[in-house]
Length: 200
Image 1: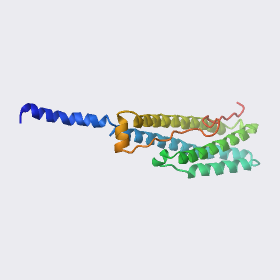
Image 2: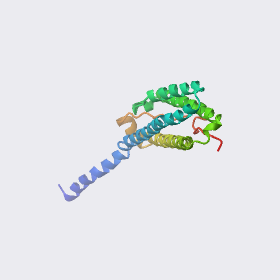
Image 3: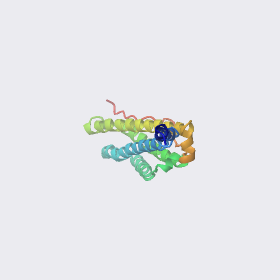
Image 4: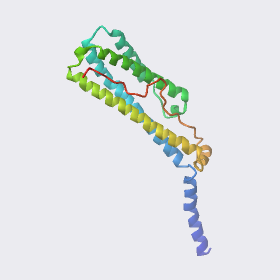
């Protein structure tokens, strides 16, 4: 075996590895896992919202007992929003993603009704803890929105990768990749953070 033949064989290995990596063998699962991680961030922000909002609800409840229907609606919507969980594989099922989105939107609507109730009671303007809670709620809604945007960007990146050459080769033949479902607001204005106006 000549020296040039040996050298040629050694060159085949890196060239083959580069060819495989260019065909989506590594990029497809990497981007899928990145999108799943972004979804975990969305769920984390929703959980933070579920954990935070009972605090403001407790403050409002202390000032107005007569609005029980609003509080019951918030509690039921929070319970439903917390009960629906998605796995990484569920992100490829539009029906499951839509069910999750609807539960979150219902919770958001219930919270909006709570905020309207708060606006109707001027005696809540002065307490500092209500003002602080308002700031936390607005910050939480902004974090939820940002997490959803980052998830959608990761899904777009993944879905584009599995549909374009040369990654489509590894996506279809090796991984059997399916497109992931982006987050879409299913009710008008659901993508906007609820605002709280306490008259200040």
